[in-house]
Each structure stands twice: as C-alpha cells, then as structure tokens.
Length: 427
Image (cartoon, rainbow, N blue to C red; front, side, top):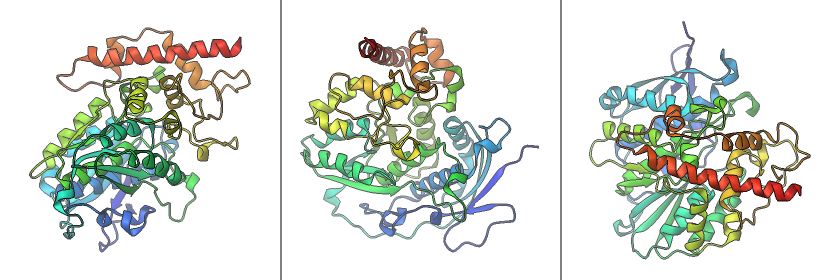
C-alpha cells in the first residue's frame, strides 16, 4: 500500500490535527501582517469561494515544500494527502477530481485533498473608493514577460485601475521594486500593486531539509490573482507568459510532463478555469495568458514599443537558478546558462544589456554547467512536430494545435540564432 504524506491545514483557533498528520497553517509563511491574505488592501471582501481557493493554494504549496521528492522510490513522484477547511464545502467536495487532476498536471504527484467545513472569513471594510476598483488584474513577478504586459497595460489611456499582484522574492525585493518603478513612472492610468508572500517557514528544521522543486508555485500565484480579481469585481486575471515557455516543450525525454514547469500551460489554465467555475457562487474570474501567441522576442519588442528601454529589460530576472541557489559566488541575477536564461538571450538578441554570470558557449564550462546548452542544441537539431506537442501534455478542447505549434516553431528559430553567436564567439 502506498504511503501518503499527510498534512493538516489548521485555522488559527483550530484544535491539533489527528495523530499522524503534520500541522500546517498561515504561520508557515514568512509574511508581515499587511501581506497576509486577510490584511490585503482590496476594494471589498473576496467571496468565500475565492478565500477557499487561496487557502487551498497556500496549503498545497506549503505541503509541496515539506514533502521531499528524494525520499520516494523514483526520487520524484510523491503521494500527498491534504486536509483543508473550506466554507463552500459541498461544492469543493464535488470538485475534488478536478483539483486532483490539476495538481497532478502541475507537480507530477498523486494528491488526495480532503475538505472539512469552515466558517466564512470575517468581512473586511472597504479600503478604496468604488471608483478606484481594478478593471484589470495581472501577475507581476519582476520578469521580462510580466514587465512587458504591465508596460502595455499601464500606458493604456483609461481611468480604470490596473492592479498588479506580486509574490515577493525573499532575496530580490529591490529588483522587483525597481522593475515596478519603471512601469509606474510611465503609467497613463491608475496603477496599484499588492505584494504577497511565497516564502515558507520551516520551523524546527534547516532550509536544506525541504524540497527544492516548486512545481505548485504557479498554482499559488494564480489563486492569489484570482482572489484579488474576485474582490475587485474584475472578470479576468492575466498570467503573462510567452508562448514558448507556457508550453515549455521538453528538451529531452527526461524533462517530459511535470519534469518541466507546467504552471501556465494551456491545459493547466483550462483545468483551473473549470475548477473556478465549479466552486464559484456568483460571478467567476477567468484566467488568461495574454502572451500565449507571442515568442520571447515578440514580447521584448512589445515592451520596447510600450516605452521601456533596453536597460529596463536588462533589470529583470528570468533565471531558473538565481544567485542564492548557486555555489560559484555569483555576482549577477541571471546565470546565463539555464533554459529560461537561454530563452531570454534569444528574445533580447541585439538589444541585450543584461549582465550574465556566464556564456553557455564558454569552453571552460563544466559538463554540469553546459548541460542546458547541450540539451537545447540537441532539441534544435531534432524535428518538432504536432505529435511532439500533443504527446507531452494535452491541449484544451477547441484549441487549434497548429497555432500553438507555429509559436514554438518561431521560438525555435529565435533560439537557433544563438548558435550563430556561439560560432562568432569561438572564431
């Protein structure tokens, strides 16, 4: 019989969990009082279903970080059992299969989420004049894609507010603040930002004792944006990600499915939108990726067209292995070697002011340092077809796969141009 790791998300005044269940709660997040969900400066109280959704997102991410993959038989697939209190109990019970499918798509694990009754959150008073409500809500990470989208929307001439949702990076608050400032200075409309926490507290243990992969992080981000949009009355929450990385085609068979991030994959968004529709009591919020049909270079050019400079773009963070996770005494935010950095290099080719730690074609790199570059070159030298696109993770019903394939094809052409840079570097 498969052993499940069991986690029990506690409300503040709730009794201890049953024997064998590990307690989790809001105290497992490093966050000041004004950044906790109940302290956010939103126009009105979120509906109970949106509170439930964010509570589940926080519980899933905390459990994800507390369950080590290397303790499993294949050093990847975990079996997680999670108990979460919800106000809309009956609707969540009916939606359990949808939630399990979504979490398995995102993380590659088996999730058994159980629900127990909870009272709705205490109503918050209005914090803004209704005229200032957000007409648009979007995630804003401090990366290139979210910067490009925010720049495009902040320069739109409208009186409706743009609300940006940031999940604070513990070691990069100045970077995120600087990137946000480049948007705020150029705004033609009211712009607000809310900062949430994604930093899990590991009480009584060392940071290194916990899981380093964060496949459920995108779920945490998405539900934070949905809750804010539901409170503000915005019908859509945007998750900006270029089409290449939203599909994130595996560079090798070892990176298939959830071994590559799937947080903004069309199938994941489809499942999450179905989940919202199933649990919402009243108006729903739809998640959309407004950059799904654009390559990284098209996204970068759109940012420049919106009035940003190459220096603004260079100030963003794309790296999948930021300095705090490196062992080489890194000086720069972007390593230049991981797959997100390679896509960034291709997108900014010709206008790239970014300072990288290393160049992927440096002959002095170790095998481990050059692993992403070699995998990329191998992938670029292998045909990529509709079968490859569909075989990894399905697309939503009604999607024309040829349109999605066209984005990947254009992205491959951009990435191939990096080979010419390597040739010139070695000459």
